[in-house]
Image (tube, rainbow, N blue to C red):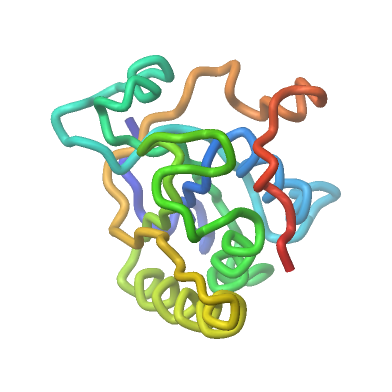
Length: 185
């Protein structure tokens, strides 16, 4: 388990997003904000893992989370340099890269582990996430008659997923990727 704080090294911060299968979420963020060649586009590192579930469930594994009994989400933890990419930009990208209007699902993946959620690490992130959500709702979803269902909540304990999940789609380019993990606008 990692305890989360906004600053991790120097002036870097942590952002945590859940948008369905964590493989695709990690993959699309790293494709669009690659850390290399240095200094990259703002993302320093990522990890996929579990968060946001029942406090009685600690050290969950993939099988337990997929059972639906933990309420943990599959999420990506992003260490980023806010002098290169702002948190608001990451939140907007999060909305662009999945379907935030479905509850507990992305494409054919269903369950609380596949929900759309933003786990904030500071009060400033909470304010920014709420503001960007309202802006994205007004510009991209209200005209279509749909409503964002994304949860915004303070980050709690984080558990890294098993090693074989880390950077999965980079290691397995033909692996399963949820069809909603693409740029929608």
